[in-house]
Image (cartoon, rainbow, N blue to C red; front, side):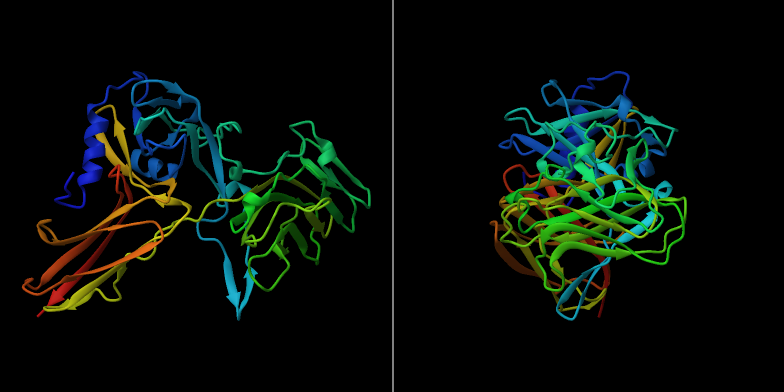
Length: 428
């Protein structure tokens, strides 16, 4: 397929979505999920907040039905992404200091449902998720299937500490604690330390050199002056502290369930947990904790900055320099997803696709703002681990307002994995 404009791949997917049979008559919406034909498992992050913005209602998990391109019904796992959309973290000199995030649970800021995992049909390049929307904001709920999701989605054996019948995975050496419907409860006025027992964290050498996201829900039962301290026994990839997650946090409102999240990175040479290694929760007062989750997500992108574009004003004769890095390894790559309505109507929904080590085609197009007329185009093919550089010259381009559109697509399947648009104005 030759791209005559930056929308060609998305339009192709849209056409495929419209032409495919509508297989679930009682579902109003269908999301097209482009998959790698040569992979066994597909993992997406679907921005269901964007689905709600587009449709005005919440996607209902109860209605979810997943089909391959040829109509085979498939099971799936729907799981949370933990952590803030923009995690708090900073360097102090050459030392890494994790800055976690804390928020009331009812605000739902630190976890979002959206990881969709399934075993795809061999040789099929697109799958479809059918669903309905609801006026009930609680209609979108997890549908976890550990057999279908990748290991890094969650490595905690008993996240809630009470639903799975495994009370032996937590303990408090000082006593004064119990496991209840609330989770782990610490009843000591002066607080104490909760430890995980071996088997609580299923972490091996695959966690090396990966991001790690810690998540916990905590309710402090009274105001205390001290801080709570959380450690995970994972070596830090950065200088500053021994542990990849080592966080001191206070300022809790008594009786209020709050969610906590902090992100770090594991050292490259990590070879699995040492015998007897435990997560440590030093708690400053009586409290309850539940929903402990540890996630090792891939990098959020494996693609470097698209364009050296430090101004929105150019002059005739200028050159816009473009550079693009296609890094090695798996990453969650931004992927526009086509959402079709039965009416029919179509939207573009924000999403990400687990991919990597793929040849990428980069296309840069200059369009006249308002008319969309294509003025100039350049493109290149980039192997994993390689960088491409190019430019678009503004010689002979009339002054006015323009949009530079960048699209990176999977070289073999022509599926978009990143789309950016940069508006600017050119003067004489």
